Image 1 (cartoon, helix red, strand yellow):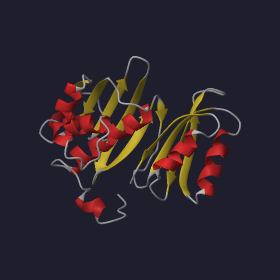
Image 2: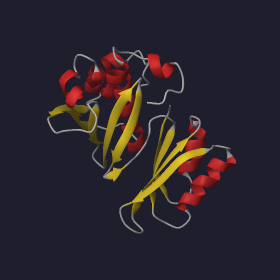
Image 3: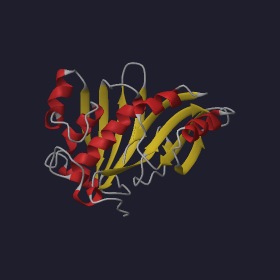
Image 4: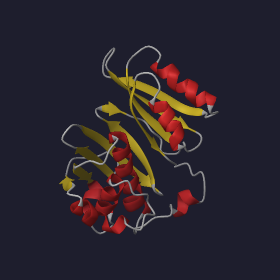
Length: 220
């Protein structure tokens, strides 16, 4: 694994016993919430291999719930996230899935509300870093070493150019970019790794770009 700073080794500032099982899990949950664009009212979370065996002892359950509630890894409410979700009538189900996974710390989150749902697969690769490997059936290849933005959009002429123009205007360098689509003219996904964390006001500008449906970021 590539380390960019000492915090990659000792882990981020966080609530919980394990950077890989707690901080990483919280970031997977928060990435799902951000991509969904709202607080879900229900979640079914499949846990695989190490996550499935140790999630209660290592706090993976409350960390995933905290992420879905929008908590950062150092939020003091993190350890009470399951209680807070219950008070808000958010139904969260954890499923110990015995299927094989490519990484021992893998979670599949299916979240939604009365109007919509989202499915995401994330893995915690250590030091609080995560990779998102699947989103609504799109396979991803996010390294987890850099900040990233994920943009759901309509597969239309000019959609990609409208995004890259905004990034160039704000002098944000693209390290890696890929675009997947389900079919010509249908829903598509841009995944862009950049060199610095994105400010929320830049994301809001991107949301107003041509043909953009939904956007979320993953900070380093």
